[in-house]
Amino acid sequence: MITAVLEHRGNTLVVELPRRLYELQKDLSSIGITWQASSLPVSGTGNIRVKLEAKEPVGEMVLSRMECVDLFLELNRVCQEIQKVCPYGYDEFLDMLSPKSDPACDRYLFYRTYESALPSTATGLRYLEEETERYRTTMENYQHACRIEEEEEAGETSEEWEEER
Image (cartoon, rainbow, N blue to C red; front, side, top):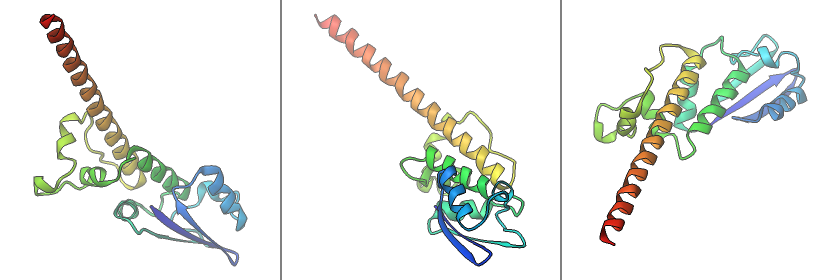
């Protein structure tokens, strides 16, 4: 999703986000970033340089929503959450965040009926956290509706079968 290049005291670390927290902390400590890790801003500090790049649209969107006060470990956590709620790809999630003017091109439009929360008004990574949660609950609502419909169909089928006997 995102490639992070960190430089500290002449040491360089290149890491792909998201990454498991313990692995990421181990990686950061390998270049001397220990106590600062939890408070490291995504913009870096005086002695820690941070460069972030994205090669995918979802990573570009995450980077475009970040603010200088957001923290590096929060960025990793948000990337983990987005990856978790989008196991089959990011198209619908991205369309939820930026609806298309042409309904034929909006891959999230179908799911809007299942929304139970309003879009976030937050900024930075907090916005992405809230929108990820909105997407998760929308997809859960859709799955629940599908299960109910399947159960109803299965019930109708067994009733029809019993009537034919």
